[in-house]
Image (cartoon, rainbow over all chains, first blue to last red):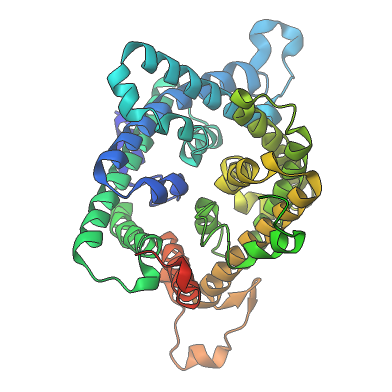
Length: 205
Length: 208
């Protein structure tokens, strides 16, 4: 039950885009039309759902203070947490590579639609941010990390798809002042949507 | 192309005409998240300048020895190493600031400015121009960071660097701080306004 709450919180209240502004660069760049935005969103969700639990396991069994106890009592006071950044980014980069290869081998059609986005994801701050939040908040099980990770991913997917849909309409039907066209108006759309999402803040789950 | 651009241009272009945030749309995440107050924004800006300049130099020195198919991982490791140094230094000498910046100092690693500049410039140029490019882009980024933070802190809490600048008399006369400015979405609006102003001066940047 707690994990379900966390999942829903991660989608709406702790939304990666509207509450933390993570993954904005690809968000702004790829939100020009709904289909591609959705593709990137799915890829991000997938990676978040994998990398957050993977990094949770690494933090718990390798990097945290005293985490190496299983290897022998003499490791009880080893604390490798200063390495976590490098390890996290390496895990994310290699998982991205791995997923890319697996998808390419077993599902060429999915690869064709996600292909270009997968490498981009290694440097999407939403992914690394997810792992760092996991460490900062001290999640205590794989299930919790999975729920939070997939929740953040779905929140991101929701945000980019919604903004892409609005952008399509704005580009087709409205007369935006010239200096504000493109990037500028996207910022304002995102801001307005962010304010709307803030209304979820008061909800207690 | 690299040789034709003078070092001066490499250094000064990112300030406005080729600004990493406004024109190249890189590094937006941190601009929005750390700009509620001026002090953390400045600390963030300085950290980015340092990391960007040195990672540009290192990658530029290594550029001929890095195999192209693993270059992203090499770049990430170099950047990650530098970011760890910066974040440990901040924790040692400026603990409060590093607390306020929380995960965002670590997120410099995935700050697209870094990857963008490494890919676009350092991989193709000699160390000295790369250093200038790094510092220039870092400063361009800091300018935006600081100006967004300036407006948000001034209008949102009536202070600058934590000192009260809006006189008490104004509050007595009924002036109220705009709480909306402290909320995250307003950072987007402030950046949009800066883009608006900048593009109305530089007409060639406007999109159709």
